[in-house]
Length: 64
Image (cartoon, rainbow, N blue to C red; front, side, top):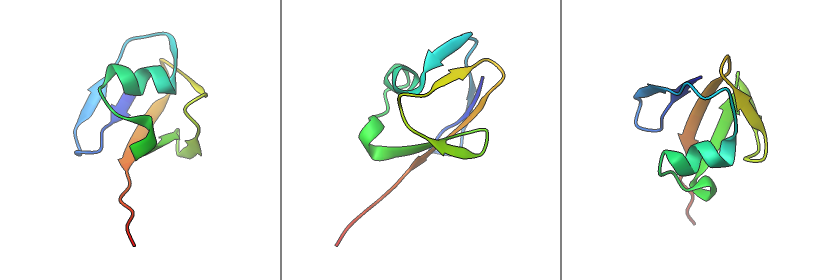
């Protein structure tokens, strides 16, 4: 699976299938600080991603 990281870099992971939450932990990314899109659609961390999927991880900033 191809992953677009928040810093603009790309990484390829060869796992067959994994929960998005586990992928984020493997990459050292806190799931509470990002939004993940799988194949162009925003998904939750409970979703699974397969080897043919494309993930885009976007770090969001909030303030008041």
